[in-house]
Image (cartoon, rainbow, N blue to C red; front, side, top):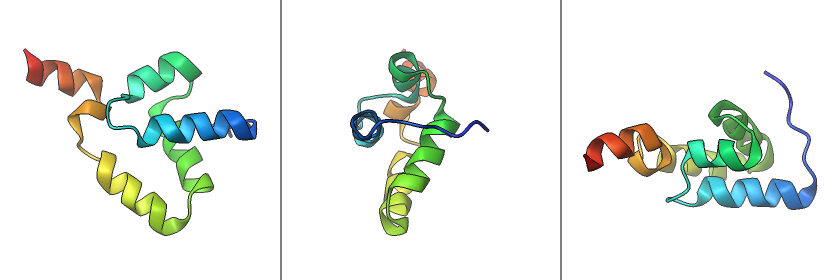
Length: 75
């Protein structure tokens, strides 16, 4: 996996989008070009270990973070 190099401002924006419940990984990819795996990798490197665990627990299985699942549920 390619390592992500971001400016501090871009890193803050990516982290903010990743924490936001209504911003899906698909939308993050559209806006930034980073895949879900790259976002996870960046979050792992940028957050404290406890904060990363809280974030992963929060987004795992959350239908709003995975637009495909969200759309299926909304049909």
